Image 1 (cartoon, rainbow, N blue to C red):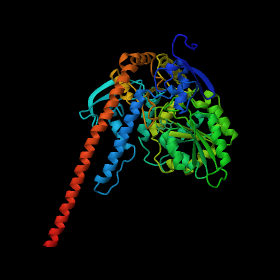
Image 2 (cartoon, rainbow, N blue to C red):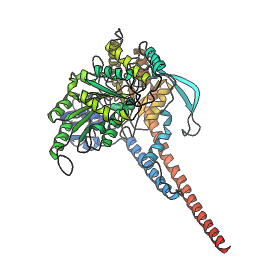
Image 3 (cartoon, helix red, strand yellow):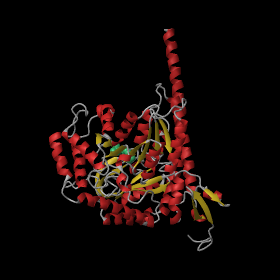
Image 4 (cartoon, helix red, strand yellow):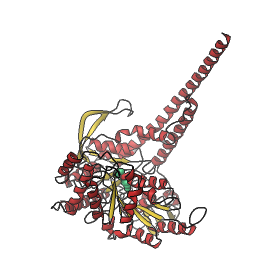
Length: 575
Ligand SMILES: Cc1ncc(COP(=O)(O)O)c(C=O)c1O
């Protein structure tokens, strides 16, 4: 970095975070500004996203904490929208004459107000398989997004949003014919739970292949990845147990942990030192109230974090868990098939013996191009889950063609199809991901995550930038996924790019060319943000007028109805 005053008149400050000190040019220190020096970007991002206060020596401290005007403006807009949402809720309590309480409470008002404006960026209907390019159905609205009508027009878009990491979700010369054949023999559904008539030969073969692929003695499969976490955790641990969860774990883990009845503690995202502190403190403290020993401790992390694209610091986490005799539960939804020399996930990537991870969870919805989830572990663990897990005992088993698709994909990855396509796909995914990430960084985008990870969040920060980014990309035939509150913190909205082995170099270059074109560069996004924010505020003020008229009108009606009823009663008495 340049020395003070060199090449610029801006002062420098020293910033300290995670025992690192960095000198940062003052003009680039603004926390919510997109413009930061390359050397300090990751450092500041980590500091900001972890929600840390950043200590600075010197008199410029105040400037670091300054939100830029747009973010502040946006926060004010959000506050106003929330306030009116609450007002509407209170009004509805008075005007609700049927005695029902409102069915959607809390933040729904806020989400619906904000979401409705940008709803065209979500749930876009697709009418082809999620390959490198897919067909997006065009929709039209005449009422400001309230109703979106599907048209018969489609646009062929470059798909940068699906989790089709290895390209198995499109037609595959090995997998697809076998899946179709399986559909003919077994049909789409078993119409039964696993313990009744829902265990076919395909299911048992799948469990054997999953165990072999991930390197564990046994495995159990479920019809849905989300349910795998939310139904398995409550079976593994309950009252008296302790779950220590990464702060950015997926909602399925959060739900499973909450449903278990165990005590939940959260450690700072992907920070082993904080995990150790939480473990030590809680082991010393024991269970709440009676301070007895915890019956069990499970530490839950993800292989690749779905909203951050970061690889889990598994080696350190495993070492800490061993030291404190805590079980390790790793959700490999995004890492299985995607990382490691032969696609076997984070253990292979970091050279960790799978025996050190007690519960290996994963989904088939990403790299395998299918649906469902799995738990792999010791024979004893899997046997226990087969007796006790409600998702096995009471829920329908995974669809046989979907199971066959997974078996075939695993066979390709293991080279059992007699080709080298599996290895080529994994190498291609890594190459594509690293190329795209480095190019985005060179272009000055704030990209989260690690090299080798196919998940690439591009930070947009302000929710109002999401529709601009998404719509402009779509206009140029690029389909991207944009993510905001409540999936991310309010001011950390982002576009999440998912790279696939089926993308060609030309596809990626096309996407980069579009990104760098002026219409979706940051100056125009900022202008758009301003307009959107004004729209939000305008919307809030017009709504207050509408609600007050509605409120007084309904009160008037209510009192008139009462009067009418009184008159009728009087009438009845008189007659
Ligand atoms: C980390 C993680 N776990 C679990 C799930 C749920 O998996 P599924 O979508 O297969 O139900 C997801 C979904 O994306 C995820 O990202």
